[in-house]
Image 1 (cartoon, rainbow, N blue to C red):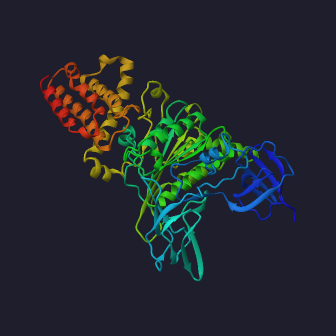
Image 2: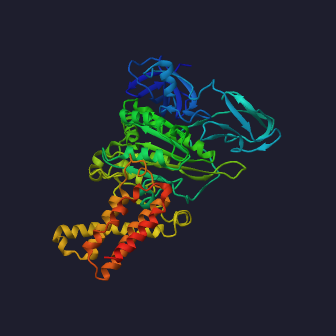
Image 3: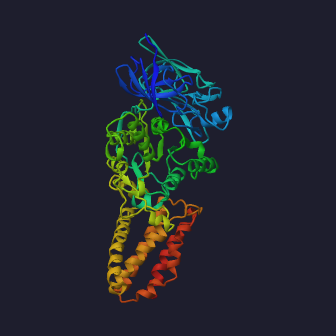
Length: 581
């Protein structure tokens, strides 16, 4: 039988003949250099392969090696704190072993093989286990206890289980069923394009607290929810993603830098190891995995990177953790799809993107959710996905934005005018929305305050009315507005500048807890209601707006978390000063 060989090379696309028996999405080794590729189309004995490395110098006649295995990732201790490329090659190990540049055809294991991990079993010999059951734990970092689970599809009786220090390739447990033995190691492999199984989905009912007031108060995302951050160049998509990675109360962060500029990814790689986790004081990298696939790296690997990231995220979700995945940005991923599709001469869809773009995006975002994990022990995990989109010129009618909005439930529309005015986060409150308000109502009432949802509605209404009043003032002048309308404009400005605007570099202002957000909003709206009552008693608006307590309201964002009693004092001063007008 003729051996598989290359017949055509077109950039990252390689066509090979004599590939009978190969399957879709099988990994192949391409050419004498042994470049890694993946089969994306089959026609008779021809295989169309997207190659995850630079194909310069590869030509027709070179051999192809079929592995008959799909693109998979290694899941086990050693993931946290690491930086991988789009196909889970360990970049730090490559740098240590091979130098500054990634050599073509380099093939290193994703997880360290020689490091020993302390495994503490929780099952005993003779125990009956099912898929997803907890076998034991490895303390991977100070922050995360890595749970070793029975892999999907495996169940039976534990005939042997070991305790002590093991390398990840050592056998730690043997499970037997119907005379068949399964030897389990500390790690397992999983194909990236296949979502990991679970018992059932449950409705998300808890806010993913991010510390960003415009997000948490006005457009919250739930744990297990999906969000989209579109915006033009320079509007702060990456900064928003960084803030969420730093401050969100997810237990595990997976950050996929998919086609981002090299300098932004370098900033991420330099800053994250230095950052402290706000909830524990430990280095943030102890609960973070980074997939770095920059815009100057081979385009095909970009297509695989978000699948690699979400498979790792699902693995930690299955352990019962709350996981947040940041995809920055799905536009670059879609551009990779478009390039490969063009080289395969497929019929183009809107703006040259392949016709299956919406289906691929939906497939990706549908892997988010809050779930009941497999296993006999009750355990819940959540995977939240926040994707940045970079439409050309900030055009929200872009196919990638529109396809994303059909599947996500939160839309944070970034505005370059706000960004240019140094308003951060530059989320435009008039075009953004969240569909999680109703499912999160009980959580807000129980965990934040009874009145939180009511205050949010009132604040949002004032911001919407401000836009209408500004339009009237532009047409007929401010003099045409009455005192109540002028007060609305002042209070809406206070909501914008004192509540929605945050300083990412100020130690107190960069993160605000949910309870403090409620107190801040309550303070502004309490001033509004008291001022409204004073106007109805015919007190002068100018005197009300010049009260010293307004400075205290604007500085409330800098009150430390352990001094929240100051809000009560400011409220008392509001009532006292307005009474004295």
